[in-house]
Structure formats: structure tokens, C-alpha cells
Amino acid sequence: MLPVLDLSSAENDPQAFQRSLREAAHGYGFFYLVGHGIETERMHEVLRLARRFFAVPDDVKDEISQLKSPHFRGYSRVGGELTNGRVDWREQIDIGPERPAIVGAEGYWNLQGPNLWPSQPTGFRKTFEDWERTVSGLGLRLLRHWAQSLGAPEKVFDDAFATAPATLMKVVRYPGTPDHSQGVGAHKDSGVLTLLLVEPESSGLQVETTPDTWIEVPPLPGAFIVNIGELLEVATGGYLRATRHRVVAPGPGIDRISVPHFSSPALDAVVPVIELPAELAQHSRGVENDPDNPIYSTYGENAWKSRTRAHPDVAQLHHGIAPAGQRSAY
Image 1: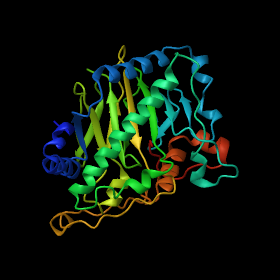
Image 2: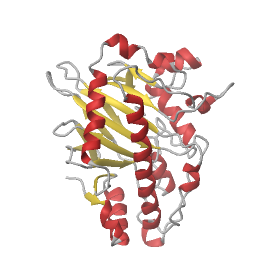
Image 3: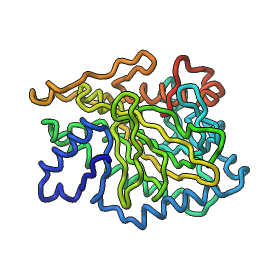
């Protein structure tokens, strides 16, 4: 089982919490977070509203089809996303910061723009905008603890998030199927930090602890499942390394709802590289060098790489590009 960290314990013993946070991210790249101060009922309400959206007719979902958004926002039908060139068996809404599009944008600046919000169910937009603000605040709290645990100033990451953070949030449903095993294929997250809310008693998330060794990660009541992204790997020279994970599609008659929140800095932000204390630096593994998945220090380049690979239909339709090489999920 993954480590369970209690954020409330940081109030009385911050150094102990920071040590546990560092060790969990170094050893696993994943952990459960409890004691975060977000009410369980609020978490359940977010999941209930997500499930209500996926129950609306297909024509209502298609009103906000991602094919209408050059910013990769809105609804993707089942089978509308790829990981490693294979179809992911899930449907979802992609939500980012609500900002105007940039006239004449090039490259990753095309990721900035308005969201596509569903007309049903009532209250969807407000609920998820409120959720985004709350979870973004939680992510920044964790990053400050991480910074201190690595011997850096508490607010070393703050500047990257201070203006126009480019957070991405997904509202996802994995429908049951007898024909597909890949809910979402093995991948790493391209941002800094992911906080995942998933329905109680669901299954399917798996984490690669060592090469080709996968463990099940079931939900824990009232907990977020947290993992680091590629940019935190860059920031620590590989001392903290993003971990591959995947979701196995549910069997017939079962589905799965989840709401991942990808804490990400401004599109043009360069995440600072921390000079680790000697006792930590000697255990750094270096940033992974994968020619099929280059990791960029500027967040926008990393996000643009991932979004155009995952949604080649949107990339081709709106930007005239067809990603080359292996495709990733985020």
C-alpha cells in the first residue's frame, strides 16, 4: 500500500511531515493525503455532480465537444483520446483557467482560452470553479512543504504560480466494457503535482513501483491520491521522479468516476531547479532521458507536447499539426 500522509500533522510537527512527504515522493512518487481540511461531503458532491453530467444525453455533451475548442477544452467522447498511440476507454471534460484567447497565439500559447461549460446539470460550472480554487490552494501548500523538505526556501515555487497558473482539471468517466483493457494507458503527468479525487470503492488505478511491476491503488475514504509530475522531477534533478501509472478499464456493468487536478504553473514559467543538500543529492537519479517523451523545463512546452499527442484530432483541425512519435495522455 502507498504511504498515507496526514497534512494536519504539519501544524504541530512540520519537519516530520516534510520528511514523510519527501520520502514518499522519492520512494514512490505517489501517496494518499488525509487531514487536508476539505469536507468529505464536499468531495462526494463533486463526484455526484460529475456522475450527473455523464448521465445527460449525448447531444448535450456534444454541445461542448473539444473539437470546437482550439484550446483543448470541453468534452471528449469515449475513445476520443490516445495514450501511446492506443485508444483510452473513457469520456471526460477538460477544464482550465477561464481566460480570453490570445490573438495570433503560437505554440503553447494556444492552450490559453475560455472553457466550454455544459448546459446541464445545473450548478456544474460554479461547483467546479470553486473546486479548482480550493484544490489549487491545497497544491500550493504541499509545494511549500516540499520546498522546505528539500532544503529550499518555503516559497521557491511561488513565482511560477503567482500570475496566470495554467492548471488543468479533468472530470472523467471510465465506462464498463468487455472489449477494452486500457482505461488510460501508462503515462506520467506533465505538470508539477496531481491531486486525484476518485469515487469510493472503485478500482482500476495502478502505479508502477519498479519497471514492469504494478500495484493497485484503491481509493481511501476522505483521501486524495497524490503524485508528482515531470516538472517536479526537473526541479529536483531527478531526486523526485514522476512515476508511470495507468487505469484499467472496468468490466461490464461497472463504471468509474474520477476528478484529477493537475497543479501547473504559468505557461511560460520555468520551474526553478533546487540545489539539493549533499545528503539528498547523492541519491538523485537524474531526470529521465526518454527520446520518445522529452521533458521541458518550461511548463507550456511540456503541456503542448502532451496535449497535441493525446488529442491529434484537435491538433490537426485547429493547428494543422499531427504529433510524431509516441503519444501520452496529458
